[in-house]
Image (cartoon, rainbow, N blue to C red):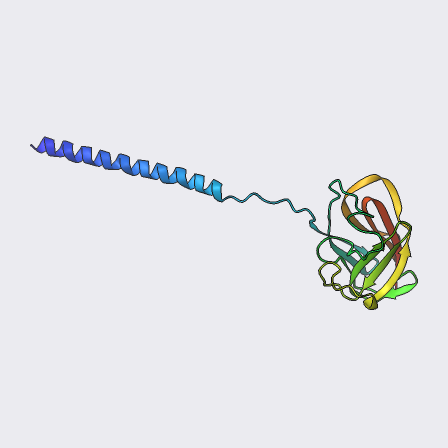
Amino acid sequence: MMKKIIVVVALTLLVLSCKNETKKKDIKENSVITNKKNEIPKKKVLSPHTETMAIIGDAHIHIDYSSPGVRGRIIFGGLVGYDNVWQAGAQKATYIETNKDLIIDGKTLPAGKYGFFIVPTKDDWTIMINKNWNQHGKDEYNQDEDVIRFKVIPIISAEIKEHLEYKISKISETEGSISLHWEKVKISFPFTINQ
C-alpha cells in the first residue's frame, strides 16, 4: 500500500513538473516571438544632423546643419528652386557661430550666432548671414535682419557630392574659408579674424 502511495505521488510530481516545464517553454517561446513583433526597425535618417568646426588663431567657428542627400534628384533649380531663399540645409535653419568678430566681404560679422541662408541662381548665389539663427527652415526669414549679404560664384564640379557638406578651412592664423558642396555645386568664401 505504501509503495502504491509513493508511486502515485511520484507520478503526480512528474506530471506537474512536465506541465510546468511546458509552460516555461511556451512562455519563453512566446516572449521571443513577442519581442520580435515589438521590435521597430530603425528608420534611416535622410538628413542627418551634422556640424563642422575649426579653431583659427584664437577664433572658434562652428557651423550646425542638417545634411540632406541627393538621392537621384535634381537639387539646384529643382528641389532648391532658383531665386528662392534656402535655409542652406534641411529642417532647421543652418547656423554659424563664432567667438570672435570676422571680416567677410569687407563687412564685420560680430561674435555671436547667426542663421545662414542662400538664394541660388544660375549665375551667382547670394549669401545672407541673419540675426535669427533659431528658426525652422526659412519660415521666419526676414531680410531686414541680415547682418551681412554678399554674392559668390558657384563652381560646377564633375563629382557628385551625395550629402550636403560644409567645411571650415584654415589658411593662416588670421584667415580661413567656408565652403559648401552638394550635388555638383560648390561655393566658397574667405574670412579674416578681426584683430
